[in-house]
Length: 306
Image (cartoon, rainbow, N blue to C red; front, side, top):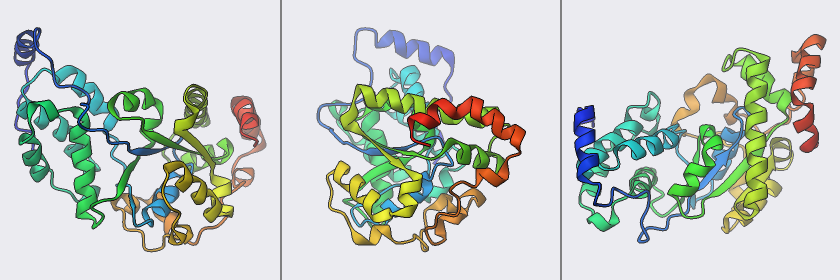
C-alpha cells in the first residue's frame, strides 16, 4: 500500500477552515480503552533482549521497532481535520514508508480497509495504532495477545503516549551508562562520547521525572539484574503487567524471529544469556576517555547505583 494523497497547503487549509465548527479526528474515543505497554530506555541498554524474552510469553507480543508513534502524533496534529480516508493514507503511510517497516512483514491494505468501515464515532488515532498492532499479533498467531512496543525513541515522548492511550504502562530498562556509551560507539550508532552520554543522561532524567509524577505506571529493570537472574526480573514485569509469569520466558531466545534481529547490533540476542557485557567499558576506554565519562555521567550513575 502506498500513500494515495498528494497533500498540498491549500487542501489542508480548506479542511481546517471547513472543520472550524466541527470536531476534528480525535486522539482517542471512549469506546476504545486499549492499554498497551512500552519498553523504554536509552538504546543499547538491553531493550531488544527484554523484548525477545517477553515475546516468549504466549500471551504477549511486541513487534520490531516502529520508530513511528512520535511522528504520527505530530502528523495527527497537522492533518487531523482531513476526511477520514485521507487521514488514514497519511497516518498509515507514516508507518509503512519508514525504511524499516518491512521488518514487520505486514501489509496495511487490509488494515486500512477495516478502518475505513468504522463509524465516525469510533474513528481516532488510537484506533489506527491499535488496528496495526493487533493485525501484527494476528499475523504472528497471537490474536488475543497483550501487545506492546519496543522503540527507544518513544522514551522522550511519554507525554504523547499518555495523550493517545488509556493509562499505558512503561518498562524502563536501565544499563550502566559507561557500557551504553561503549556499545553505541562500538557499533557506530553514535559518533562521540559526548553524544552517547547525552542520550543516556536525557533518557534516565526523563524517566526519573516521570516516575516521580506517575510511579504506578512505570517499572525500572536493570540490565545487569536481568542477565544475572532473568526469572526474577521477568516475574516483576509480569506482576506489573498483571499477567501470569510463564517459565519459558526466562530461557535464552535462541530461536527469536522478530524481523529487526537481522541488524548486526542485535544479533547477540540469540546467544545464551550471559554477563560478559557487564563492565566491558573498563577495557574499551582509555584513561582520558574514562575521565571524560566520569564528568558526564557520574551524577546519574550514582542515582542508579552504578
